[in-house]
Length: 564
Image (tube, rainbow, N blue to C red):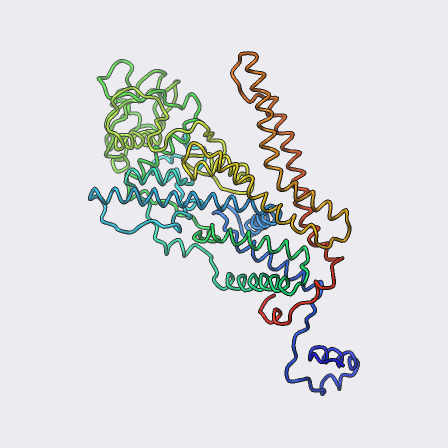
């Protein structure tokens, strides 16, 4: 005889399923408990909802405004898939951004404290992680058109793109010169789409998932592989939440800097933009030399010629080897309100004969004004780039995207924010240290080792077949060992090459053959790692076809916790 109220109802319904009158008139017990049995669809549905909810809400993507809603959804789905296959990659990205934001907060507040100690700033407000994350995610932008209103500058050879995103280094460098870009927290919050109700629902679902898994262990009940896999991703999502706790969510509108009210900011940004574009300038466009002001010679362009050229034309021809004076010009040639007041006369020489536009001359005036403001008038011949605000970076290639850029950053997307990229670029930049090998190797080893190792602990679970168990174990070892293997291969190739070059009395360098060999091995290892990760995810789902019956029994009180 059934004693459980749910079992009584089940039997009664089974007996009268074709009797509509009985179904409408028979009275149920005063309290009907939930069934202690869950179905395969219950397990699938709860795990899928928990996985997608955790990953989707934990991801705080950077600003990408040049996309429509559909493209943003596709981008988010790509990140969700990456987090599902390789969550440690996303964790590394989040940790990198956290380090950058923390460093920026410290730099900004130290610069503001120094300015306040000199009596130049009475504002006691401090920069926080929320603001720093807004900068890290590409929230501060400057348009070439906003640098000079007369031009526009985008028509000059210096501009390779219309808009630049200020990097954390640029913002910190400006702060060291006493120029702060203040944005009220409320203004950033208005752009953020953080949803407290959404996060509360996800928290409720995660709480239920964690509680029921712990309860099952305490009751001695088995867990499905899918539940183990889901719990690992819940922990990963928690780490993402911790790293990105202060990061604005789903911001689509960056802050375009208003340069009309801050001449110093406009000058400094002109210098930053100029030195950023300098490596990509053609030899004809590049300034060869910055010289102090001196008495005019036959190799000097006269100021009268400049006035005349800009009064009647939009450009002037500069012969090779001639010195172009950078001085304040008369209103008839250039609007006085556009010319910086801090210009101390000097001269610039170009590599080849070229045509100089009015907008370029205004830009060069601001570059010189920034140099004068930072360290005073030009006192000796110098070559660009000067690296006054941000020191030159030997590894910097302006054609390369994102973290390698010491001045401006591009959109940070799937293509460039990979795991290896994080290890080689973002960590060194975020920590601002010359030696970060220990951290690179530790992170590269730790995160995949944990991800693969925790999955490996499920080797003694019930698998549909022994071959599936074996492939599961091999996949876990591949995930945990890919990075250490690549480190080993790199050092083996480099070691043999060092021995060979030393025996020939040559200086060691990682040659083309070494690069090809390493890339081939890296490609093969990456394919194996991707296949191993894909198998872990797929096996976690298909293993539900053959599980112990205890997987389907559940403590009744667990089902009373609200969940999906």
